[in-house]
Length: 254
Image (cartoon, rainbow, N blue to C red):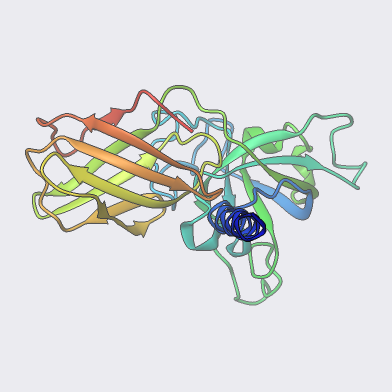
């Protein structure tokens, strides 16, 4: 009996370690950063960003968006992540008692190393949010220019299921994954045709994922893993008669 008890203890420890290794912690602590705005009140200049979402209004993101500095963008892996942001420590420019805003990362704020911008707010290692103008004006005054903020990651609340946009040609498929709830940022994508096994896709840019496997004429399924380690399967979300340039919505979301 003692030997069996030891075996059970070892097994329990092993399972615990496996769970810890396969489940990532979602960081919801507050951090310091700064914020500016770009574009206009109608979202001009915020569309067609570095995450590949295209028309943000059409894709469901609207004006509740932000561009991220290099330190936050993480080479596109942060695309789709949601942030809660509040203006702090600046009574002259922060709107009094303004509630925090929640925005989705859809673009990149590039660094600028030319003189006199060597300390530009989007240069590493600064953490900075370049907000769509309407969102900035919810927490700070227009003339502020740049303000100090605090931010934290939050789960994304999206309407409807995850969406998939297909581009490319019969020899190369590019899939835009968007409207992702939960952690928001997709870390891994697998695709499966009706006659194939699961195929690992690679990130092309932003949330555009690619494969060189020919899948034309097959219904398509996907398996997505988000940054918090959660995996969700979308069976036959794209029908057999799909066409390039079309978008499809799954019935489920994170």
